Amino acid sequence: MSSALVRPQANGEPRGLHEAHSPGGGGRHSGGARHSSGARHSDGVHYKWIALSNTTLGVLMATVNSSIMLIALPDIFRGIGVNPLQPGNTGLLLWLLMGYLVVTAVLVVSFGRLGDMFGRVRMFNFGFAVFAAFSILLSVTWLHGTEAAWWLIAMRILQGVGGAMLMANSSAILTDAFPPNERGLALGLNQVAAIAGSFIGLVLGGVLGPVNWRYVFLVSVPFGVLGTIWSYLKLQERGIRKPARLDWAGNLTFGAGLIAVLVGITYGIQPYGGHTMGWTSPLVLVLLFGGLTVLAIFCAIETRAAEPMFNLSLFRIRPFTAGNMASLLAGLGRGGLMFTLIIWLQGIYLPIHGYGFSQTPLWAGIAMLPLTIGFLIAGPLSGWLSDRHGARPFATGGMVLAAASFVLLALLPINFSYWQFAGILLLNGIGMGLFASPNRAGIMNSLPPDRRGVGAGMSATFQNSAMVLSIGIFFTLIILGLASTLPTALSHGLITQGVPSADAARIAALPPVSIMFAALLGYNPVQTLLGHAISKLPASHAAYLTGHTFFPSLISAPFQHGLAIAFGFAIAACLIAAVASLLRGGRYVHDLQGSTPATQEGNAHLEPTAPAALAD
Image (cartoon, rainbow, N blue to C red):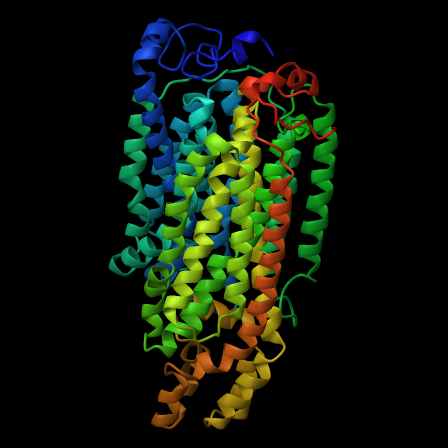
């Protein structure tokens, strides 16, 4: 590394990082005369806050849209005239939920690499425009029925392309804009916005969906247009651009392999034949094992590529590897939590406490607000402290605290006191917030300036893939817990209330995932499953079956069994993440210390506790 990149200025910011630019001279995004050292000194303080506010808006918009449909799905399906619980429509439901997550997980690395090559601000700016355009197209569909559902799925996937551009480059833009001693706070605020956005989306979808389902998508348009104009006018290319050839073989094999694995997980959640879930389906097995094989081929290609997309040499940097391993495990523990808690609240707790099934989606989002509050409290504070003391103590402690909160959730009775539930969620949010901000700052500080885009994309891939994988794991564990006892209990309960044996047997034979989706969508599960058969029952029996207590009391015991298994998995994931975080070593900033053992030795006087590479 040249001395121009590691010699700090008086204000602590490495000299030269903001002076590099791509060949070709001036322009809005280049480092021409407009960015002379005097001008940079006068507006640098203001620019970093412009970069923070703009990138935080982009990340918040992208993550709000990752969950905004979850609560609004009943209104969307009613609006387009589709019953998602009818046979054959489960796939539409899952793809509307998962398509956005899959495409963002797959594309963030490619867009991060393109940002390194052609400009991070350019990619980020284009991401705003793409996101706004497809948000409009999502809201203006003229189709009806399953055609409308497939239109929404296609537009959601393309909206995810814009989201991937925003997620891939926001951290790199911030790392370019802030000096090393302030990046923890900046990346912490950005990361907290990303995580909090997924929970804000729940409430926003619950508020807008009942008014008009199109508002769920239109709400992003003004922010997308504002972000497009604002980023075009104000953001500057301050990173090092390194022109290179596109790694087509790497891009294609990575995309194909990861898409196959994530699609396999999506179909694995669905019933197959007479099986409760689809993990034994030949299609799912081919997708999973075929995808893993293609990813292995991808790794072999990247070790031989002159200019790889997925720079495997970055894994020689211990803070980068340990941070991403911890992030993957934390995502596995956290990703499925939102879905699990929503089913718990909507299917059991809220109906028992007098809420109609149609009201439960909105109130479930509101009930989970303490989790977001915890993030908002701990994230910025831990990011600021990590600038002074390093990421390790806060990220490690955050994972231990998160594991403790999962223990408390597992011990909570199925019909809990809300203040206990809220307190545990607050504790979980604080733990995740303590982890997320320092961990992201530690990862980004460890990267060479010309690899920040691809490094941020790699990190986002781990995080987004963990979300999809976690949903698959949590759903599977809970469904397996339900499948062992629910059919017998459901059949007995229905027959006791006068439902004909044939109808009771038909409903009991339905896969538990159908019942869970009914609760997730805010439908009355028993009324939906019985259909016209409910009209043949005595009024008192029909009222009891479709009331607030029959279904919750029926599934409480088997659901709690599944919860215990799922929370046990989350506890293990968080504790292993804590160990991975502990192994990252002391505080390490690439700008000051370099990435190889030799460079670190030469700069040992700058940071005595700097970690060595993995080989050490």
